[in-house]
Length: 200
Length: 250
Image 1 (cartoon, rainbow over the protein chains, first blue to last red):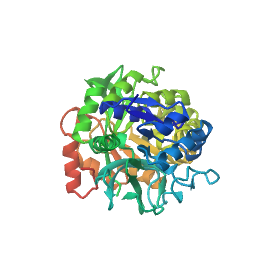
Image 2: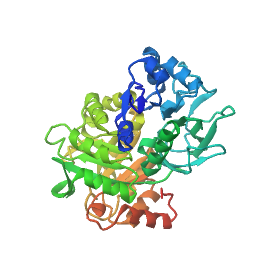
Image 3: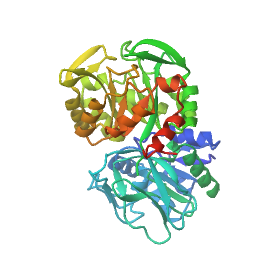
Image 4: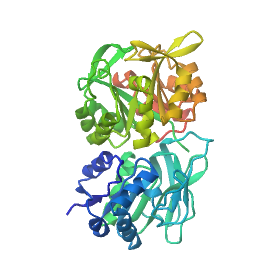
């Protein structure tokens, strides 16, 4: 069995994520069955592209329910970028599409007072309770953001682009990042490594 | 707060890094994967690889170079040069590109910008604009600067953003390789016209030039020869910019 099971979200670019795990010596496989997503030791849910097409892809293949079950059970899961956004109930990006709804609230667009998309490195500040996420600079590529307050038990890290937004959150070995850890140099590599160890 | 990005650019031809003046007179500047690793270690925030021979020789961008660079690189990678369609972009993404840069193909078929933005997200759709001073304004050049597109650069910048471009790579043809500094009037005009990030390119000889482009509105600055010629490391440039109060990733 591979160290990491990657859930394909249709249009997501998997090459950079795969390369990041390869550099750490972790083997990976691409998920083909919903059942394996539910039970795999570690799952990565990358996300590049649109909210609606990503969630549509997960639903068509039966992956959405498997992911929800897995997250409810607190199994080691790493959601990246749009992957983080999919965990919420919905998004301004496609108002008629339901997200996984693991967390309450909706994703909204970044304000016009700043350049959108946010492309570049921004400072991540972990708040109380973060164990995996450390302070540092991470690479972001997003036009939409999460701001809802999270339920008890979730530790949050924030960044600022036209106001504070959720940069990442964690609970146990569930980790979700709005930034791209696979593109965040040595800091990102260390974060992925901590998650791999935590999820051992 | 979002940091300003320092982006070394590798102009690649036949699998080797090259550097020319005004897009001509190319000379060898090293191996792409080796330079990519070197620049990341120096603190580069991102890397751009442009296949400068692709459009003129009408062949696909070298996927092999992209794979080799990706294996080394844990910062974002933008690839351009000869990208003509969604399939073409998809192959580049599968090889390890994070963003695709369109130039001539976007002018010839502007719908391509929207096709790529819809399929992969606008953060993936970079439009490269090569601009040359013409009268009171700037004209867009295509085919590696060999031909005028008959368009105004600022108007074209607005158009491509409306079509879905998530970032502009703005190169001054007049300044490219001349070491006389970025065309600040061009950078300012385009940065004011759009709300997406603008990468300034063409003419950098030192940190002072980078500082000027940032002050003019660039969210990122691209340079090639100053790094290839080992005059400056990326770290040197970042240190100077930080001392001048620019928000920079340590």
